[in-house]
Length: 584
Image 1: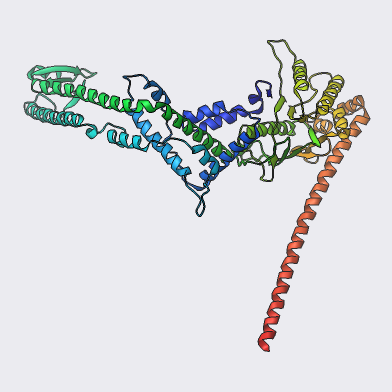
Image 2: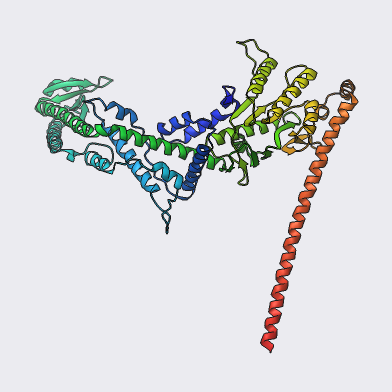
């Protein structure tokens, strides 16, 4: 289960759905995006990830036959009723989409050179048993041309009708041009006048004053009233014949389409099944396109509760920052049976909530069968429940305060939490008087820990940091802050709690020193000293981490230098032996 009901909005997954739908080629895939759900079935998740990974390979390495994805299910369902027929446009969409289905199934039927294994095993398995209709495509091509128009050659009768129609039209055109020449020579029409079409009939334009000089029927006049359009008496009968032939043509086309539709009607259910397959392919393709756009991969999957990610990135945040020429700071995080709950502390606007939402969104994406933007060395498991308390849940309808709504969430979470639950809580214990809020939060945290739940929780409360320092199964984490530059680094370090840097931030924005001093006296020098101690730990840890990296880099360069010298020594030694051998 996922709690609460609006979890997708809380995590930002509703934006992911919209981007996936934008990547689909037709409504078939869009429906799959709408129906995509969080899964707790390990095999199902892994199969979906493998399918998407295979399609990522295709998009990177091959040309895939995805030119014509059309949803003709509405038309196919309609023709189940007798005496209905597919229109020419629907038939054209049917032809091209069936051709695409055939090409896709053929694409996946290929084998690796030298063995019988398919190139893309999961997508090939998905294609097994899917019916294709090459004969149907060929029959449609005998009816429609490459532009989707019914061919003259579709039937002998249609050929006769169109030939007669063309012949009659040519004779009308000849008569009109002759009449027009005579009218021009008599000054009845303008020199640049030409035959035109009005109400489906060929006519000539004449000035109103001259309309009685030409025998015929007035069909229309221009908006300005300076031109009337006359159908000469000599061509009335021929124009009537054109109208008659057009009616015959329409009836013959309907007859052709009806005959074809009658032959297709018994196959409608099988055809609909093939279009379900086309929807599956469209959906997987959309996931693969999104995964490539976000540098996502399918991590190593384990059928247990574990979260061991390197270089994890919130995909929506990355896209947003890249539009402004900025880069997101990746997240390294591990939750396992020994270190189940991570308690993150640190300054406001330092990235705590981003870490929390990154974990929630990526885990949710993963269990929807989507690759996630993490390093290839990452490992992931599955959770039966994800319980979320993020943001202000104040309800006007139920007259609940922010804190009351948080407490209701805690009540639900404590009831639902177990060893396969992932809990995500932002600003744990906030929204009320700090001492009692912190005490209640600590008591709730103890219940979560006793139930062996997993989680990522952000907080500012010192008592929670102290509890996490000693409690088995819980670990502190800190969002790093640059005290010299007075700006957050958006980097998570696991192992020690973080400082809120409240005094430093207040001093940076220019709060009077006497106010800061008085606030320090009010809260107590011990609290300030403890907070400063956390800052010093964070600073020292970052310093020694940088030193460790410098030493590692120097050791690597030293190893490379030693290897280079050894290679040079071996080369000189071999050259020396070669010279000695040559001299003797």
